[in-house]
Length: 159
Image 1 (tube, rainbow, N blue to C red):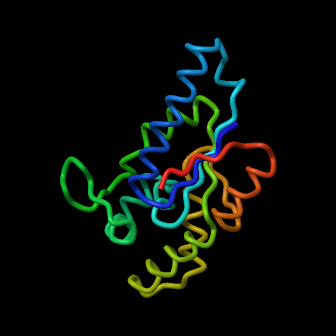
Image 2: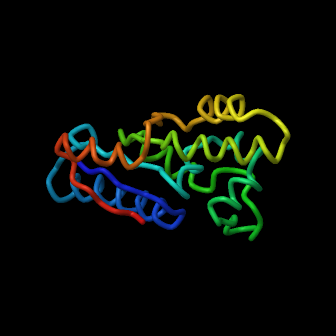
């Protein structure tokens, strides 16, 4: 049982790599199947936006990228899709779960609402409705990390 605590774009990318290694090494080294393992990746602070679908990146990518401090590695511009989507989907297919920080999502919603002249609640609802598969909102990412540890998950800090 592993929980990855990610707070930055770099940390989120590392967590995806480490989680993949965890699944692969347990299979090759110990003969364990993916279903024998439990992996949670917590997306909080500046990594939260990677839990949103491509639709949200297409619509709000400039603001999400600015908040996270991330550029599309191919175009060197603000991403218009979730640059980690394929890797996330691969891990979800293996049984990994994402815990998404509600506090950071509310913060994103407020920034997007202010820039667009709309209300925060409607943007928040839109973001929540557009989480990648197997993602779950949690009251705060740091609380999810704590609760996972209370339930026997080993912590890996992804930065």
